[in-house]
Image 1: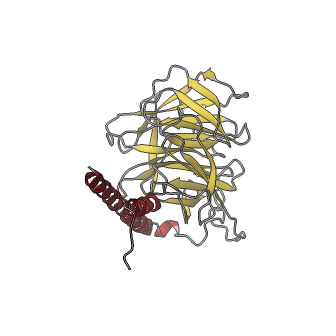
Image 2: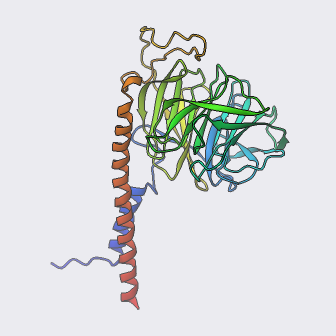
Image 3: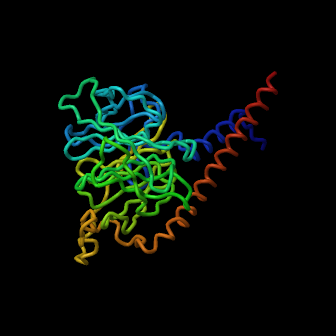
Amino acid sequence: MRVHVSPAAPVAFLFGAVTAVWGLSAPAVAADGSRVLFSFQDERIAESSGLAASHRHRGVYWTHNDSDDGPYVYAVDSRGRTVATVTLRGVDPRDVEGISVTPSGQVYVGDIGDNLDGEWPEVWIYRFTEPEQLADTTVDVVRYRVQYADGPRNAEALMVHPRTGRVYIASKETADRAGLYAGPRELTPDGVNTFTRVDQVPWVTDGAFSPDGRHLALRGYLWASEYTWRDGKLGDRRRLPAPLRGQGEAVTYTADGRSLLFGSEGAGSDVWQFDLTEPEEEADGKGNAGGEGSDAETDGDRGKGGDSVDDRGGDTADDASGQRDTTSRVLLGVLATVGLVVVVLRLFRRRK
């Protein structure tokens, strides 16, 4: 028996393959339990490159665009609607990449990107106070000049510790160069603030401290991890499912610390929520000793069973393995896309 195959069947098949690989029709709830919390409704927010939960306004998140969009920071509610646009007076941003909000309502905006991989002699951080009322407004900012002790570098992750107020930056570089940098105990608007390398990290596009200061979440395009925070350095690590959706450049904890939110660039992009679990506390005393010069944070037990700080040399290999898996997936997507184009062109020629 001869079976008739519609000319559109190969196209439908290949489009399905491309969709599956690239995640173009991703379900609202993923297999790991993560789900879409909201999608950005504001067409101006086309390159969300940072995300931070408000401590003053419940269910509100601050975000900003990548690169030189302008001196704007947007407040978005849990439905993705923009409820306030804040203009930073006197600021001409170069490459804004990160944002962090303290419990006291201080918003730090990191103009820390360097797509030339270390050509800028200094970068900047801007600070303003969260408005008491959510409405479009223009605010004055405090501007901090930033340099790195070991020379200029590209970075996209800005984190402020909720207990100590110390500012950290994670660089976006290859494994042999990427680092976590700590600023002075207090930033000063007078002179240059020198950030010093305190730990090694993978390729990082964003990061955030948990509201209690006991954990630090870091993410890249293809991975995400949560670390315990010990004496101003990274402790035990737990890998997290980072949604592979577009160019992933944002992560933040919800205000209650029970979930992580992941965002990506693109008009109307989704923000995914992943609920965290809290294993039983283990009274092992690790990380509880915080002397002078440390952040004096407790160890926290979420993430136990991950790699220890002394074994994190394996993190790079594990991240590379995960990136190889995702790279294979991306290559498959490219091949499927090329195949789709070829089939469509052939069908078009036949109909001529």
